[in-house]
Length: 386
Image 1 (cartoon, rainbow, N blue to C red):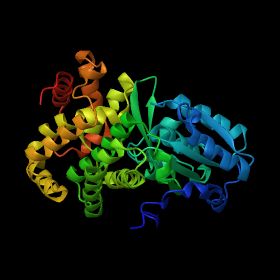
Image 2: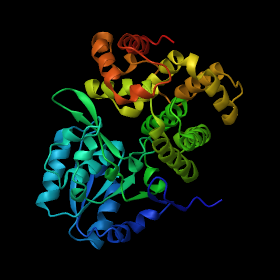
Image 3: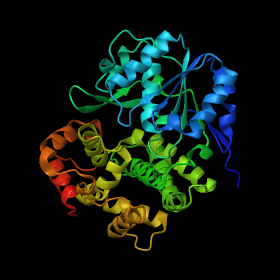
Image 4: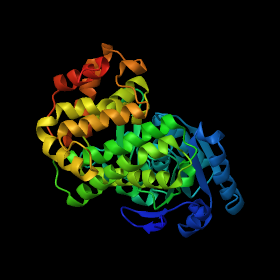
């Protein structure tokens, strides 16, 4: 079976091993002749970035570089990138990396021609209508992890550093015009990051699947996305050079981010403020929080998870069987069981709970959770009590 394809849902996706070679022609197709290449400081030191930079430098000599995106980027990251974009007279953005780099790249493209501040475009009410659409620069996204799916998203998660909260910046025009999804670029991802980002992709699919909102297309995508994670994450973790496993996990990541337009839930509602306060890796926070939120949601999702267990062909097709598979998978991937294992205690429980309740993901949880509920879940995750 060929694992090469052209997809246009939700955007144009050039998928397959080796397709990074099309980067210059992709930029030219979008009338990007002087791109700003955006990545994080870690990836900037690796061969995969050098490869992409060389492609652009040879084909598009006016290419600039912004390589200082932090793991949990804040508004200052976006401001620095926009300043470079304007100073260099760039006409588009090419983002390469995990969710942080892709989110900042999309935000730079959004802000390139705006006069209002970034926070005016927070995903609240009709704020998105304030965007000057003509001022949004075209962008290309190149994922190097299989987790966030930011490459097919219409939003960016950016930390408001002054108020210690993660803010969703949203506009439909933030969706990259073309995605180059080349699984060979993910082959060098270390096992720990393969695990954390892979479970992140799973959580996107799972929370979308469990969301109470009606979106049968997203429902089907989410179910198949979970199956791909079930079949291929362990393989990608055990052998990072397995291109079939890397391809299927990259597809699962894209599917999760496509599906969660149906909604997310309590896992993300908690992991966002946890990341903002404790600077944790987003995928790892999701992976740790997952079983604690599933247990709290059991009354509303038991039947759905039993159906999912049947589709995944688990040995025990019940809520308990699904939960046990999640716990076993986390253990086999070396995911810590508690927040305490990564140095988080109960001292900020109230702040995290209040942030979770304000988070947009709260609205997609299958059961209504109060601030007190979120506080209890957070403390349970610190102590490891299921």
